[in-house]
Length: 538
Image (cartoon, rainbow, N blue to C red; front, side):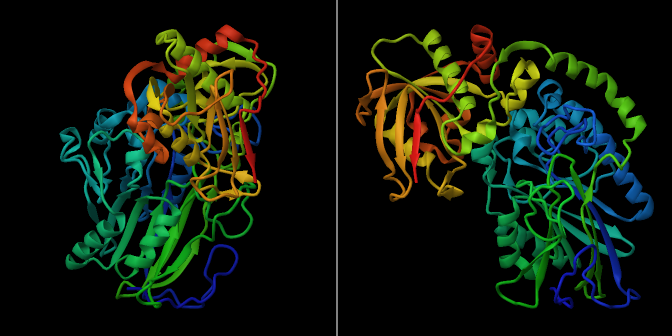
């Protein structure tokens, strides 16, 4: 579908190919992704802006202001939200979907994608949000036939008209939502097959410019582009929080690629797809202009994301509208719970044992022993690295600190599990790492009740060199039954830990935020340091 005229991308805002604009069709796209409840200013490193200075960026009033500024300049722009509007600050924990729909409806969106975090409170937490949204919601690879509350609340594709041309929009959600969230009986199908099917249907309706609104992540979007390129033109993405940018990013963050990324079709090198994504958390907003010829073939592009720093004003009316909600949120999140004498950093948890992880699994272990007393079994406790979302800084620990650390407020269970499955989980813990020398892994389990040593130079699945249980350091027995406590997401097989599904006689012991709060109140001020529970040799 594409005839690529430009061979190189110059630094900055244009592909630089000298072509006249006369006779070309201009399409403007304003987009953002992974809002994650950033109703107030955020920062590069923390969900909330802790200091009132120029490190404070983004936030809904600034996003709203800049979208409307661009719409004044380019009134025919398409405005797209690529999903994950839920979850990420205390605003969502306290106010849920209702406040989200109220403010999302103030932006003149043309379409929303559904993100995996939209399912964090189950289909019952998503249905009223979808019902309340004014703009169409798109998801082509989602089957809600067994969740009737969601039926009729979204579309597979949409046709827009801009200046006499038909623009097709197709929505996609990551199929990993089944593992990453709580979608109930919703099924997710192959995004490539869904994109191809919907694009062909749009072509039959006379649409020759097609956009995928995808919450699948940059790598998956690239795969879709390679395999379905002849059917689509542009992918507006989300999920991986990828900053696509031309040059050095003003926020100092790592750049995942140019804006846009060009992907050639595996079937026809003449066809290319433009992929855009704009980081996350309202730090950036995408701003793309593409020129097409009369056949719908791409000719030229212009654009770069806009960095939403304090040089861009916040809309005062929106700030005023947010104020009563902000008062409720701040009162709730600033309640002191305890204190810590040391800073505990969440980014330490990808490299090995971390103080935050020790605190969390010890809190779970103590709660499990108080709820399910047994002298017949040894207790073990686990939490996955992905469940640890923020650092705890030295000093006062507040309700808001606990929320930022554990934003999903997951349930925690204690149950019986054979040692063989514990061993499999520990092996999974050091598989598919980002790096092995030194180790850096996305799935690393923090542990209590055992000590484990790995050699990550060994074959995957055989990297445990020692694992001992309890104060008496008895080797883990594959045939012995242990009492395991873990967040329910992990226990249900999330992040690829399917072995936990073999659990038996499970008991709910409460939600992780309250479990941690009780632990902090009991042992404050905390003096947590690591103790050699996890050793990784590389």
